[in-house]
Length: 228
Image (cartoon, rainbow, N blue to C red; front, side, top):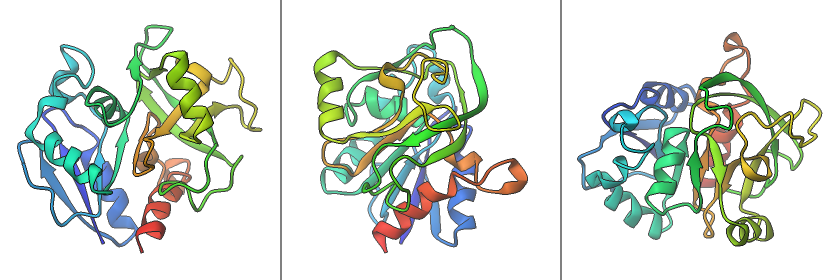
């Protein structure tokens, strides 16, 4: 089993993602954004950061990187892909996930721990969780406000494609628990096939108790469990 971590110019969580996989004893390599070959990997991680400086629109330039065509082919063949924060934005911009990430309602960068309620416990990315579990995971973003039109939102809800929602520490989904204005408090979603996931919170930053929480481990452990 082998993971790949894509590096775009401006990525800043690539080493965190690499370390997260290594701590679980799995093989992992970096993938440069100009690569056109992603063969040999079982799961590809698009990490957080500021790809291409986010100068045009968050993730909008990264979708043109050569590696994204390879990742689209990889995903079309059933390969697992997870985008975290900026990686989530890139997946939406490239059409691998529906919807878009727009500026936080407060128009400010937010960096803090939030609570996430697990909405789907059968996915490749959450199969070791139980539906309704509350995970404490940090966020760090300015454009984490998930938006989709009503039809897309209904499709996501009806098909079980919502992975996580922002909630309070008891699992209640409230406006107060929503840090960025995301529709339906959505913090993470799946594609229709279930092999591509995106989430704004950073599980790779919650791998060890010494860093406050290790709730992020279960995301990576679930991927490993499904691929084993």
